[in-house]
Length: 234
Image (cartoon, rainbow, N blue to C red; front, top):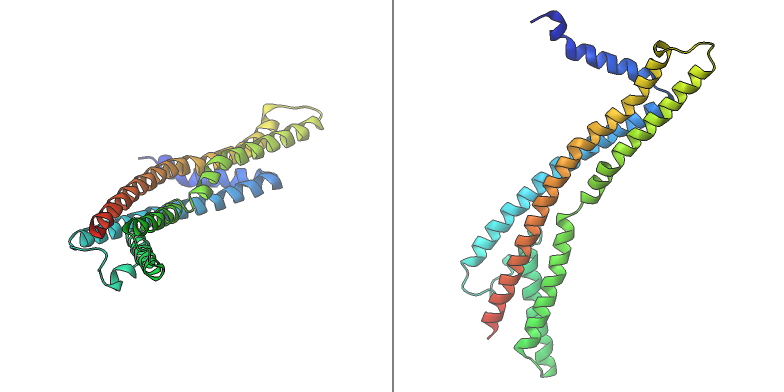
């Protein structure tokens, strides 16, 4: 292995720094902004991945524990206190709505199982919507970075090329040697935009697919929970 190949990454990074220094202030601002967006995007992707993984584990553990119970409507309050678990949140809302409707029905002398079930199902739908928003939180911001980063890079490139040609226009003679530094500096913003957008789009699609899978599992759980409550109320 030659010394040149050994130090190629170092030389390349040094060259990129020199290109960044040659950029005009607008190009430098856009490049730094894209670097900040890259850090934010990676932070969101890692945090969201571990959050979804953790919620899925909590959900499966709670569902397994709930499946072993003979009756859902008479379970102690400890089952309804774990609101941080999406499945537990749906369960708590449904059971509390069921007994709240039963109490009101008894006061008015119109306690029917149908009314209790309707209240429980409505509570399930509200909790389902709330937890769906929880699964999809931060995804809009990540999608904005995916969409906006390439356009910011193109804006910096077009601006830099315009500045490079304007600088050459005032000179007596123009050559590729005088034009190349300005153009290469302008293209740096496009590279920065793609470096931000490419990993982000893969991460966004992966997280979107995972969140949709969890939402589908949540809907199936809500349906089975409604069925169990209906069977026990008869």
